[in-house]
Length: 249
Ligand SMILES: [Zn+2]
Image 1 (cartoon, rainbow, N blue to C red):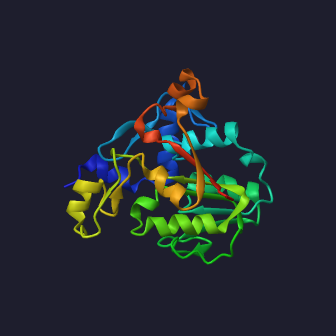
Image 2 (image 1 turned 90 degrees about the vertical axis):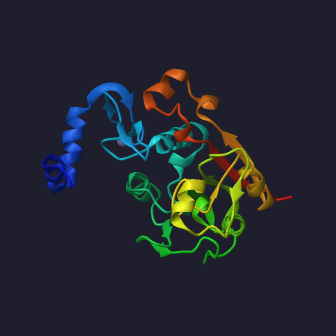
């Protein structure tokens, strides 16, 4: 039975809740590079909850804030107007900013939710060498044949382009077992009822087998400790960035 307070909160429209959170969390200790707002602290998210995870303004999580800074510092992404980009399972905080920036070459794809293209990433209905940029984050751990999806991403990426294919790394060695279909067992073993594996650092080997040259970047590789603290991306939840270029050899 929900308490009266929680029942009331559920009736409050989302924009009103968002505005109230932004006022309540007003401050300068934390900063979200995605929306450009600063706060006293971020909001909790996840189960079990991570205390400083979600931006009260744009909903960006730790990994989104890290990616934004990476794109600013290590790529020419923000000069990509006119590029051809494939964005799989698009996050609202990114799509609302990237679509107007990139223009008509920007394509969102999703198998379950509304998107420009309904797409199974193991069967991408685009020609070879189509995209300058591919971004797919926290999707491959849901896909039974992830190797095929990686090969498809490689096929549709231009030789001059790059793909950011991000997954949670949660164990020492990748573990999967297709016979496990029970949701409770998947939660116990893979962390979520719709996950089909846990990835370890050997994730990179699968990307290489699919034909990519892979470069891994962590927050401390390009950001000062003060900024990592201010963006609250110093925990494992921020993850690592896997930059994939097409091997031409
Ligand atoms: Zn934000």
